[in-house]
Image 1 (cartoon, helix red, strand yellow):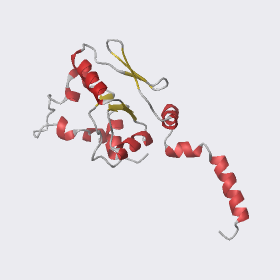
Image 2 (cartoon, helix red, strand yellow):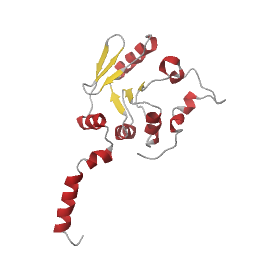
Image 3 (tube, rainbow, N blue to C red):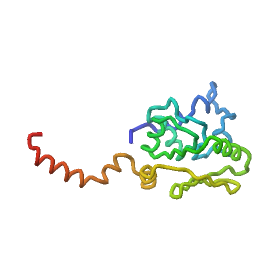
Image 4 (cartoon, rainbow, N blue to C red):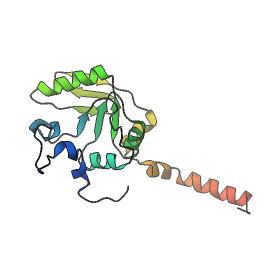
Length: 171
């Protein structure tokens, strides 16, 4: 993982979260009491658009977020999310809107992500199924980034390289 400073999480949604005077904007949803300690974001469509660098993911992960649920994601953001341990769940927009509405009025707006069984569990017996690429799912469950995943095949890679170098001594 790329080195970054301890304040990286403070950059998350800074223009929305902090007023020009430097105080918290209490109209911003993540500054409100029931959502201050959130680890899951339920967002709109095309989440991450304009966030083509891994820094967008770093701020989310460093702020404690583990999952973003949306109806669609910007492609680069989506791929960077999985490469850096952030689950990006895609569900239909009508379901996202319904979920946001439920979370806005229930007393305890808590969600649980069951990655193994691919369900979002929530208040009022809410249960939403989602799809995820099996390879990405396994990497998240095992806590593997792309390098860790590749290193699982280190012995096979070394064997291949040795055979290749033996049969191509001029390289």
